[in-house]
Amino acid sequence: MTRHTALWIALLLAAIAVAPLLTASNAALNFIVFVLIIALAAQGWNLLGGVAGQSSFGHAAFFGTGAYVSALLQLRFGVNAWAGLAAGIAMGALVGWVIGFLSFRAGLRGSYFALVTLAFAEVLRILANAMGFTGGAAGLLLKLDLGFANLQFSSRAQFLWLALGFVALGLIISLRIAATRFGAQLVAVRENEDAAKALGVDVLSVKLRAIAISGAMTAAAGVLYLQYFLYIDAQIAYGVWISVEALLAAMVGGRGLVLGPIIGAFTLHGLGEATKAFAGRVPGIDLMVYGGVLVLVVAFAPGGVLGLLAKLRPKSRRSGETA
Amino acid sequence: MLEVRDITMRFGGLVAVGGASFSVPKGAIVGLIGPNGAGKTTLFAVIAGFLTPTAGSVRFEGDDITAMPTHRRAARGIARTFQIVQPFAGLDVRENIAVGAYLRHASASEAHRRAEAVAQRVGLGADLDKPAASLTVAGRKRLELARALATEPKLLLLDEVLAGLNPSEIRDIVPVIRAIRDEGVTILMIEHVMQAVMNLCEHVHVLAQGKLIAQGDPPSVCADPAVVEAYLGRGAAERLRLEASHA
Ligand SMILES: Nc1ncnc2c1ncn2[C@@H]1O[C@H](COP(=O)(O)OP(=O)(O)OP(=O)(O)O)[C@@H](O)[C@H]1O
Ligand SMILES: [Mg+2]
Image (cartoon, rainbow over all chains, first blue to last red; front, side):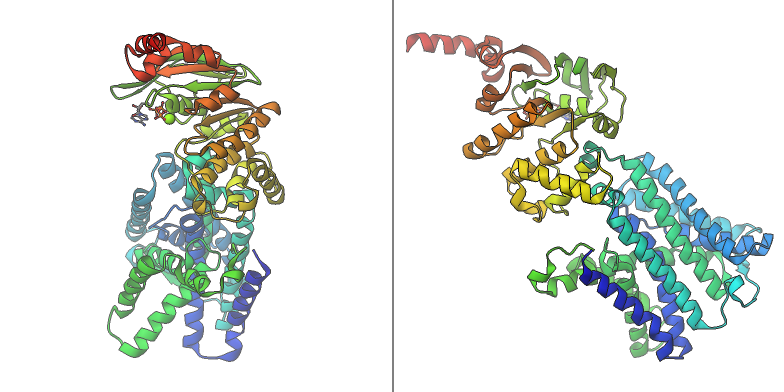
């Protein structure tokens, strides 16, 4: 990473951090918190789908597991919310590892892998919706009990900073990985598995580590969602919507790039809000915008927003840019 | 160092390699030649662990490695290049070679330092920051060699690294290969460029239609009627002999 990139990252985080000092609008703060949660989920997707090239269509499996594990521990076993957070993240990693073990060991790649992840997420959604233990179709409602110890904040600003802290942590983890042997192996697996194997890369183990870390990050987003809205059901936690959000944000921002998920999440939802403002409350109009943006990105800007920006910059400054 | 015993590799009904046995002594440069489709690349894939042979075994430094996964063979010291080059197209040359260097060096700075040293050696020193996808054919062949070399192998399997190069590029790379051997790396090379085979190899095995049909030092192998027939067709050796005696 160049100093230039580090500066941009610091500026971006600082700009988000001061937002609550500039506006007291609940709608604005809600918007930012929601987008940060999406960005965190997308950071998880990006590590596996962007950096390691194993596109998933089922990151809801991790998001939902984080949310449900934490909610169930709190509601059924009286466990503290912070411990619930830790457990949710750990279970996200475990579920990731298991899905990875079953599908990568069977040699699934590309759209086959994507479909299998979708199937896993759907199975979990149906189970969570059917079982009494998980609250069935009624979902799970956390008791309102404000306080730092319960991971519930009366002020939206505080929650925003917490979510931002997680996104910053996700950034640091992604940057660290990019600078290590593991990061180089992830990219090697994405670019050419046979060549990677020939150079001594244990492809299965690299993919399993990637999906476990990816699952943990997206599970953290699920726990944050739970703690912010204090309510989940199967459709929210394990719904296809979050798989799509995670994938789209990473793709639109710039697949495989550390800042991609954040830029993508803000771009998408910014556009979504703008459309709503112009077009009024036409149902599904934001979804149409998403579809349109996806088509545009795939057709004209495979590098996403960041890829476009890099193209606009003068050539001399572009060399040496990796992050 | 390497012992290939009775290797048979069948693809459905096609016998690509049929009962091939040979060995490569430590420190040697051994050639593997033969006409197109003879099964040379298939044999390499078996040795490097990309294919599990239908029958037979591969031994390396005395151990049976027939069932060992590819990445562990690389860790043991077997590196291969690909006849159809397989660059990490989205990465630059330095990053490509570093993936190989990471096998023995966990630190990024050390892996990059090694990658740069290897690049210098094979003549890619000026291209370190170029995307691999932008290299010429000759550049890509060098990159294959560099990546394999960066794993610090004991046995290097070179699959037609000279194919597609012009004579002056070949003249540049032949001494590099010899120098690698002189440092103690054992080399087994598939090569169609006979001038290079003559120049480099002490011993040559000839594969034709999946069977090893001849072996020996390069000049005697080239004079072997069975080899000439394998390349030029049945009766060719006889025709050549007659033509030579008429001239
Ligand atoms: N994966 C595969 N599936 C089916 N057939 C294969 C496969 N790989 C190779 N073959 C066949 O096996 C035979 C040997 O191929 P191989 O590539 O080993 O030959 P080669 O000696 O390397 O030839 P060349 O000099 O053209 O590189 C060919 O007939 C080829 O079509
Ligand atoms: Mg071949």
